[in-house]
Image (cartoon, rainbow, N blue to C red; front, side, top):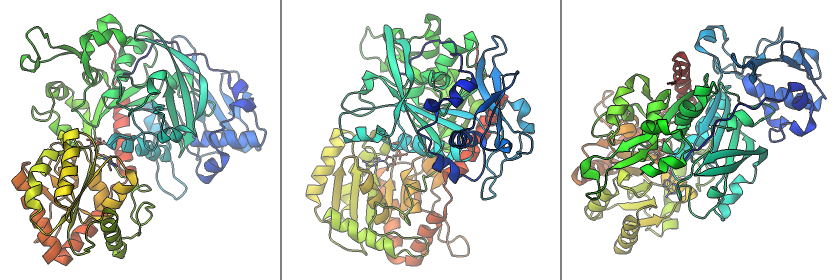
Length: 633
Ligand SMILES: Nc1ncnc2c1ncn2[C@@H]1O[C@H](COP(=O)(O)OP(=O)(O)O[C@H]2O[C@H](CO)[C@@H](O)[C@H](O)[C@H]2O)[C@@H](O)[C@H]1O
C-alpha cells in the first residue's frame, strides 16, 4: 500500500548553495547523454546546462526576486531560474526556466496552468519534429517498471511510456519499489545510488523509515523506494506493501531540483491507488499539492486491493476519510452468516479522488462502465464518465523490433521475411518439435489466469491436436494450468510444448517463430502480445474484447477489390467452438492462400503502434487535467 504523512515542503536550498556545490552535480546524468540531444527542451536542457556549467566551472547569479541565472562558459548560454512561491506561505515550492533574451529555443520546464497555455511556443526537436507545446513535471507511481521489475504488461508500460514522454520534453520521474528478492534480479537495481536522506512515514501503527535510490536513464529519473518490506523472497506481489511516493517530488533534489508541488501524478492500478487519496486527505487540505493533478491509469480493474476493514488503521489516513475507501460486499459474496462484508477497496478510493481516469484502450474504457465489465465499480465509474478516457498502449520499438531483436536467431523486415522462417525452424529445434517450416505453428504467451481464457484453450486443445499443427504455450500462474501444460506436452509429444515459467528471451523467440498468436482473453484492457505479434508478422487470433477488439482488425478477403484487409481474426462471444472455428479459418488461410496470408502479415507489421503516438494523446489528457480544478473537499 502507499502510505504517507503530511509534511510541509522542506525549504529548498537557495540555488547558489546546491548548484555551485560539486557534491550536487547530477552524477547519474552523464554529460555525454545530455549532449546527444541537439535541442534545448525543458528539463533536459536544464540538466545539460548544469552538466556543461559544472564542466565550465559556471555558477549561479541570484537576483533580488529570487530568480537565478545559471551561467555556463558563455554568458549567452545562461538560464534564468524563476522561483515559484506558495501564494499563502511564500515558501519556494519549485523553479521554472525563463529563456534569457535571444535564446528562443528554450522553453519553460514547469507545468503550466491552463491559463498560460497559449503563451507557450511549440518546441521543435533536433530533427525538425514538433515535440510538445506544454511540458509538465510528471511522477509515475507504479508497482512495476521494466527492466527493473516486471511480471506483466504494467511493467512494460511503466518502463516505456515515461521514456516516450521524456523524449517529448517533459520532466519525468518513475517511483517504484526497490525489490531485493535475494536473487539475480537484484542486480537490475545496481545502477541506482542512494539519494536524499531517509524520510519518515507514519503508518502500520508507527514510524517507518524509507530511503530513495535513483538512476537517471533514457531521460527519466528512476526512483526506487527502499523499505525492509521490499527485501524478501518472492515477486513484487508477495506481500501487501506498495510505494511511498507522495514525498518523493517534495524531498528529492534530482539533478539539483525537486519536482516540487506542481507535478502531475500518474497513478498506476490499485497498488499506487492511495496516492490520490493521500493528496486529497493529507496534503491538499493543508495547502500542499493544491496545484498538482493526479491521473489514475487502470490497467486491470479485476485487481482492486480489497482488504479487511481493519486494514484502514494501518493506512495513515484520518478517520473521517474512511468513506473514500469503504467497500461493502453484496450479501451473496459474503462467506458466512456473521460476515458483514465490510472491507476497504483501494482502487475505489482512487476512482473517487483522482482528478482524471484513464484506461489502456477505448474499448475497455467503455466496458468498465457496464455491469458485465465493471467488476462492481461500474456505477462509480459511470458517475465519473466525464473524466474517463481510453488510450491504447504503445510498443517499445527498441525492445520489440524484428530487425534489431537480439533474442531471436535471425532478424527480418517487412521487405525481407526470410529471417522469420529461420526463426520458426530455430524455435522448433529449441523446443524439440519436428522441424517443419510449412506446418502452422501457433503460440500463446501470458499469465495462466482466468482473465486469459486458459480454460477455453484447455477445452479446445484435444480437437486442435487433431489438426496438422504445432502449438507452444509460455506462461506461469495458476498451478492447475501449469500442471495441465506438463501433462498435455507428455500426451502430444510431436505437436505441443508447454514452457512453464517467466522468460523474456523465449517470449521474443515464440513471437518471432510462430505463425499465429492465440489470445482468447475473457477480458483484456489493452493487451500487448497481440501488438508485439503484429510487429513480428505473427497473425493474432483473439477474442473480440477490450483492447484486442480495438487493435486487431478482422480479415476480410473481399475488401479492397479482392486485395483484402485486416490484420488477424477476432471471434466473439468467447467459446471453445468459436475459438476453434477462428483458428481453423486462420490455418486454412495459411495453407491455401499464401498471398492473402502475406498481406495479413504485412498489414500487421505496418501498423503504427509506437509510444510516441500514445504519448501525444496522454498530453491531451494532461491538458484537460489542468483545466479542471483538483479534487478538494
Ligand atoms: N511467462 C512469460 N514469460 C515472459 N514474458 C511474459 C510471460 N507472461 C507474460 N509475459 C509478458 O508480460 C506482458 C503481458 O502483457 P499483457 O498486456 O498482455 O498482459 P497483463 O495482463 O500482464 O497486463 C495488464 O496491463 C497491460 C498494460 O496496460 C494491459 O495491456 C493488459 O491488457 C492488462 O491485463 C507481455 O510483455 C508478455 O510478453
